[in-house]
Structures are given as C-alpha cells and as structure tokens.
Amino acid sequence: MSESCSSTETKKNKSFAIPLVSVHCGESEQDESVEAIPCPVCGTKGAYVKIITVRHLVEKELIENASQSDYRICMDKKCNVAYYSEDLSIIFEKNDLKVPLWFKEDASPRYACYCSRITEEDVFRAVKEQKLTEINAIRQYYDPEGKCHCNVKNPTGKCCTNAFNEFIIKALGRLDKIEE
Ligand SMILES: [Zn+2]
Image 1: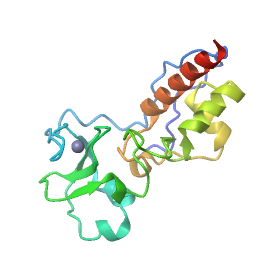
Image 2 (image 1 turned 90 degrees about the vertical axis):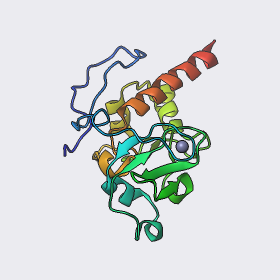
Image 3 (image 1 turned 120 degrees about the vertical axis):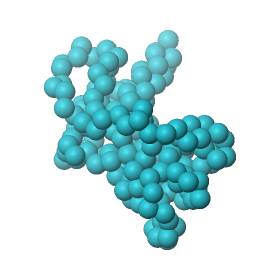
Image 4 (image 1 turned 180 degrees about the vertical axis):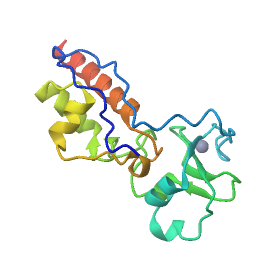
C-alpha cells in the first residue's frame, strides 16, 4: 500500500486553473472484475469494498459479529444504506458508521479527505483565502504531516482524489458566483 495519494509532482499553477490531475493511491480499480450486486434497498449497483475498510468504519459494537465476507457500498445519495454484505445478510446504514458518508445528501460535515479530516468548507476556505486549487497543496496546507490511509479511512476504501477534485471545482464555482 502506498503511503501517499500525492504521487504526481506539484506543478505551480497560475492561481485559478481547474485541476485536471487524477492522482491515485496506486490501488487498481477492481470494480470491473467483481460481480455487481444491487443495494437491497434502493437497487443501485454498489461498489466493492474490502472487509478491512468496513471493519474500520462501522461502529465497533455493530461490526463484532458481522460476516467476514467483502462488502458493497451504496453510493446512492438518498439511500440510508452504507454497506451490505455480498450475500445481503448484513446491512449497515449510514448512521452505523463512525463518519458521515460525504456523498449522502445529509452528510455533515462533508469530508473531502478523510485521512486529514478536510471538509468541504475547509476546501472552500483554502481556495478562497489561500488561492489553492490543487489537492496536494490543500492537504499540505491543513495537514503537512498527513499520511494517506484511504484504504481504511475513506468509506469507499479508495483514494479521495475524485471527490476532493469535485469539491475544489464546486468551491471555484461558488467563488465565481460571489464575485459576479
Ligand atoms: Zn441503496
């Protein structure tokens, strides 16, 4: 497992360029090869999540007797389901987790980066006040010593890069509106 999400070198962008880089932790996408299992509640096809991630994020007393199989995560923003086991015998709802799922519509706070606990509002402030528009720069600003543990800290078990980028783009959009 690589220690850091931030493998690309930081190019000095001229202030407000929209970041195009997609940095990965080095974990390969595995969704293609696993069987698609729809969420038992909303029917959305869930993404594969390793048991180790589920174990880290579900409240301790709930996970103790849970099945050892791997899980799926329901990415539907309205559905209350967070994780479900492959045989559908176990369902963990979003409130059974220690952290809010950023993509659920009522998430609060909404984390862009779980490893460094950087929220959507933190991203907005960094973009607005520090003129930072790159993930690595924002991470560095808030958490210089930060290490990437997305495999156990991010609820999807994957690097937060894509979600983080969306928050940056959203922040830039919000700023445009303010400045108009
Ligand atoms: Zn669902």
